[in-house]
Image (cartoon, rainbow, N blue to C red; front, side, top):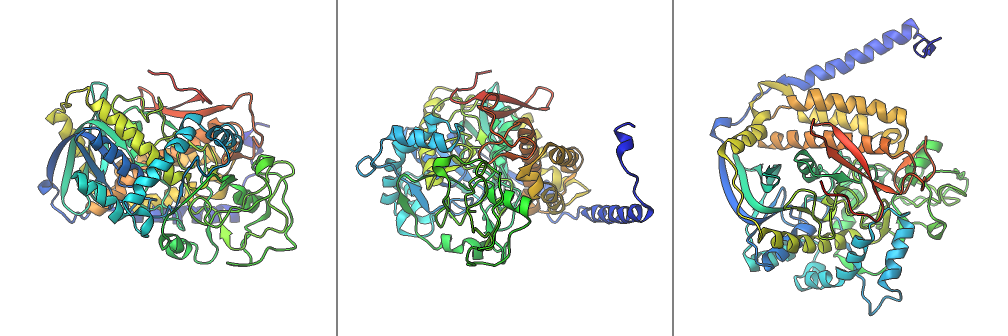
Length: 582
C-alpha cells in the first residue's frame, strides 16, 4: 500500500461537514475580497523630499541615542518615526534599565559575560554582551540628566536633548522602502499617516531603530511593531538572524486582550535601574505545560499554587544553575511566565499553577536583541555599506536566545543606539551625497501607493486575521514539529504569493495596515523556515521532534538572506564568529 493509500477515506457525514466548513471559509474569503472604495484623491497625493547625512528610522530608546551621538559626532541627522518620539513601540513598556556599576557590583564584567553565556547556552554574542556592561552606566547617567527616571512617560525627557540640538524630527511617518544605489544605502521612502503625502529622504547613512515586531497579538503592547525595518532591509539584500527564537511574555487569563489591564501598572511606574541579575526566563515553558497537560487556566488572577498540580516532565532545557525559581514580578519588563526546569528532571516547579497567566501574548516576537539584521562588526554595521541597526532591529544576540539579564533590553537599546550613531556619522563623512534617479523614485512611489490604486482586493485586516490563525496556535509557533510548520508554511506562501500582491487600501490608515500585513507575512515565512532549519531545541526554540540540544551540529546562529532569484536562503554562522563579507 502506498503512502497515499494509508489515508482512511472520510465518511459521508464527515465529508459533508468538511464541505460545509470549506464553504464557510470561502464565504469569508469572498467578504474579504471587495471593491476598493477609495476615500481620497490618490492623484493629488504630494511628495516632500529631504536630505541628511544620517537618517535614524525609529523614535524609541535606540533611535534617541543614535540621533544624539550621530549629531554630536558632526553629522547632519534626522529622525523619522512611525509614532511619537518615546511614545510608541515597546519603549513606554520598558521600566527596568540595567546598569553595571563597578563600584557596587561584586563581580567583574568578565564574570557577568561568562554567566550570561552559560544561561544562554552559548547563543549570545559576547562582544555585544560586554558592550552592554561597559556602556550602560554612562547611558543611564545621560538619561538621568534628561529626567527620564523622574516620570512615567518618555516623550518629554526624549524631546529635551533633541530640541537642544535642533535635530529634525518627522513623526507619524511610515517608512516602507530602503533605497540602495551602487551597492550602498542611499535613503528611504514612505508616507505620512495624517496627511496625503509621500516622503523621500536621501541619506549617506541609515540607522534602523525600528524595533522588533509580532503578529499583532492581543495582551501585549506590540500592535504597531511589524518588523518593518527587518523586512525593508532584507528586500535590498541585508542578512537577518534570530527568527527561530520566541518571546515568552504571558497575559492574564481574565480579559486576556486588555493590554491596559494586563500591563497598565507598568505604564504608570517610573523607570528605575537595576544591577546584575542573570536569569533564564521567558522562554516557552508555559507553552509546553499547556501543550502536554491541557490549558492550565483554572484559578484566575492571584490564585494560589495548586497543591494537586502534576509535574510534567520534559520540555525546554534550563541549566541547573538557573533552575527552581520563578521570575520576579515584571520579568523582562512585565509579568512573565514561570520558569520551568525543563529536560531532566523536567517540568515546572512542583505545585505551580498557571491559573493567572496564559502564554502567547507577544506572538511573533523573538527575544529582545536577538533577531534583526546580522551585525558584521562590533559597531552595528550590516552587510550593506552605510546601513546600520540598533536595539531590537539588530540581531546582536546580546543576551542570546533567552532572557538572561533583567533590564538589559532598554539598556541595550541605549548602548547600541549610541554606538551605531557614532559609526554611521563616521561612515557618512567618507561618502558623497547619494544620487537617486527620478525614475527610481517614481517606481518606489508607485509601489507605496499601489494598494490605494487597486479597484478590488483583499482587506488587510482580514489577511492579518488569517495570518494570525495560521501562526499563533501554540502547536505551530511555540511547541514545534516539522509536519505542522510545513503545513503552516504552505498557507504563508499562499498569502505571500496571492494575497499580499492584492491588498487594498481606502485611505492612508489602511495603506499603513496593508504594508504592515505584507511585512508580517514575510516575517512569518522567516520564522517558519528558521525553525525548520534548526533541528534541535535550545533556549526559547523548542521542537517536539528534536527535543535535545545538539552541540555537535548547532553551535551556530541561523542567518537568512534573499538570493539573486528572490528565494529565501538560510545559512549557519558559528557562535563567536563574525559573518563573512560578500
